Length: 306
Figure (cartoon, helix red, strand yellow):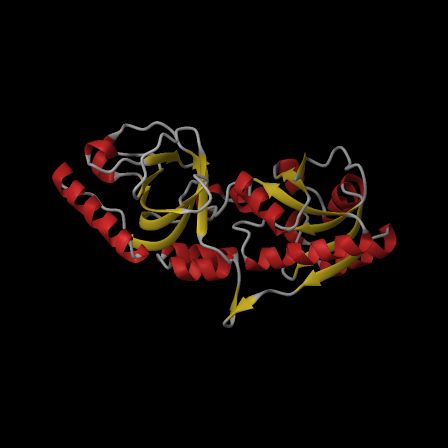
């Protein structure tokens, strides 16, 4: 995927464009990008997405912003898998937030992206005060030389697929429902780093991944599948949280892989959370923690029928 940062310099050639935050890249986002790719193929232009960093709600109300489902790298990888070939990342700062709807159209869409066809979700609003909408875009397109289409929401069993719906499912521990809305299990990517080797002391060596999601969309102990270590995903058990028994304060993802003994420090892996086993909790001592980890591993093995 070709990535452009900011809109001060225009892209090399006109594009077909979809706009959104795309947090989680759920089934609704994937359908939008597929529609984008189809339109781009008809017009023989590059299918391009416009997204924002940080999320607008993180800019306007950082204390109450929702948990991110995907970091920027993860989001771009998933958008590319869905069919996007280019992405423009607009820095969402005070200057960008102050752009009027008309200025957004002229400076970002027309000058920056040379848009020829635009696809938006049915709830998309833009510009200072969120005054821009589909009707304004359509009128501007008639004047400035681009066409616009809106995509209706995707629903599953009567539920509108949304990032907030995925967050609710993750927070409640319903990994199966989150996977239904995402079209895949929830995934966190990262590089394996050296830890304190406490897992080895407890009899369960772990691959440690430093987590940059803040706040976390969920915590707890999970049955997981890990990709990036061979041709097929490997099953395991993982703890996502701060490790209260060990006095942790920063989020960490610790993954114990079943029947696996290899040095994988520095390897980039993808952890798929397929089933929640329990909430994270504090134990009174190491022996209690060790016993619970053994029980968690056994429960995960039983889930995978190993």
